[in-house]
Image 1: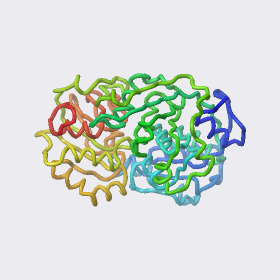
Image 2: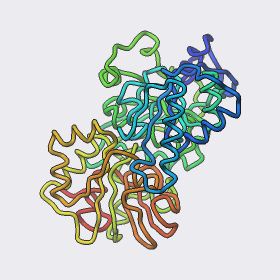
Image 3: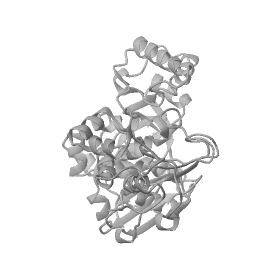
Image 4: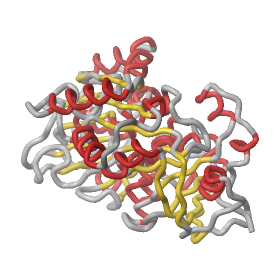
Length: 416
């Protein structure tokens, strides 16, 4: 019987011919990511467990992104604890305000196809965009990995998602993954691997795949898997080896479910307050007044996202009394958008452009909303209290749709 992508990666990691869904195995970790929010808790557990060394300092990436710039007095404690740990144990891969963790992990070359990667953030599923097994864990598990370099996992079952055809103009990969989440529901892929395939997927950029892998967790998925290809190799600046080229779901693999879509049937959609799986067509929400638009996050803060927003905003102005906040996903994205003239277009339209980081997405800095305000945002979650008070209404959309809403001052489809 054939194997799914996740089964191939885990089997290769543990040196087995094959593994089966539900099997408990201990994997050797290729890379870990720790973010600033979790550092004090990780360090506390690491010390409590009695470790006196990090298993491999070169495989640890520490990223300050959620709490920069500091918005509360306690934020600086996280910096100090993280810096002290990095200094004590010789960590060299430390990023202070270089961008969002999930953007940096692939952008800076830390993750390669076929790797096994864990991070202290639920959206660590993002790295599946390059064909890596990546998933989020808690601080206790991370402390254990830092001391041992290993972690036990249960081999996930796999849901196959096949999409063929050409996406209509104005439809982005964000619309695609939101529709899939709406079909699966928030718990429809719990502890499963979502394996994406089809000619629509093959035509997508790595950045577009990142958006989809990032949001797989919103259907409960343990991970999201894309087959590494020539686009992956170019993005990772490498040549794929035979193992990496083999990371294709076999036709006779054991999938528990297959979802099949025709790309031409996708339309711009939104996730409505306050659940990510409450999906409606944008056309059904036309006219809903808004107060703010946020374009950024690890879901949609990449160059192609900012470019899509700029294309909508070029020559137009943000509606009166509407705030448009744009946050690039990394310093590199910021520089590229600057060089391409994208930031100038956004600024001329009335956008406020902030430093690269998590910012408003995690509800810490850069545009927190108050009671009864409505925001259209490109990030990955719209839970109660996520971006301000529990009475804030959060709609999730693609960068193109979000930009159109900023111009109209209300929910609307992409304008020309």
